[in-house]
Length: 422
Image 1 (cartoon, rainbow, N blue to C red):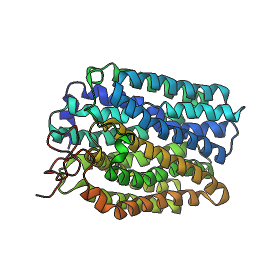
Image 2 (image 1 turned 45 degrees about the vertical axis):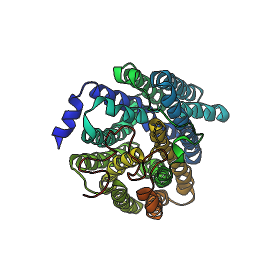
Image 3 (image 1 turned 90 degrees about the vertical axis):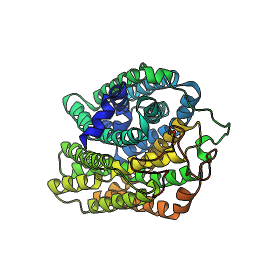
Image 4 (image 1 turned 120 degrees about the vertical axis):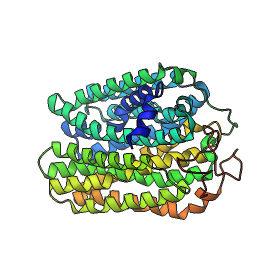
């Protein structure tokens, strides 16, 4: 298992790009919990905390595809670093101004969200220029998903540690300062400075003219909804048990489960189209969310959280392949940014719904939102199966389902042959 990942990390620039991107994504990966904890510390309600987190998520959803398209057109350094600095300034405004003026607080989170740099899509666009062969590129997608789960494991613990040592405001400032350093490391690298997108057909819809990509994004809206609702539900569960640290352990367990699942997924070669496999993985993901509504004791709930996370990284890694297969030529960063956008909108909806669910019902109700999101994601994938499996992306040859512009032989995972069974 480890040998394949080590080969990737030994490649020139690979470790720096992965680490820099991971660090640069830390503000976005921890923003929802940081905003919720900050709002609660300032005396705000769960509903207000959920609304501010939702505003951030929606703003990210608007900014990511726009910035992703800008990266495809103008390159990474000219977009990524200014965006990272502006996003950090937005969160700094929230930390210093507090909730004394709600319009100002909302403006701060909106600026931070809109300016969130599209580092995720940028990294996935860089892998083909750094690694050798499709096998390594697609294993790197799995490693990317695993690294993301490390962020989701360490991030909440880091936020809660900073809150306990200093304050929620200090946590906002430190996390965003670290994020700027990560973005700086990426854009100063040789691959980032040299990268240029493939030529693209001028079209106002950009990546969204691909029916298969639209189907995938529809499903992953609900995966984002599930994850967003867990953010608020976990805080409510921790409040019920009188210990703020419980939240950090729940989120860490969720991330640890995803880490284990992602490592196992990326270590083996898969046969068959990834679209079909994605339906199975998302079905298992939904099944893992449902037991969280039982809200048992802290040790049992931590175990359930770890189990619920096992299929998260595999679902994300598999979705990367599907995006790559369906993105129209010249829109790779934008297409991956739309996936981030979908998560942002879904997470925003999840946090917005879970807050009132806690106050009008119970903590179990807010966890039920996560289960419903997983089931809805599976329903979308089942309903759009023919679109995902049988329609080539615009600008691609019809006999291959959306070959990637990054793949010289078509976007296939290790063990695939043109995306079809041998």
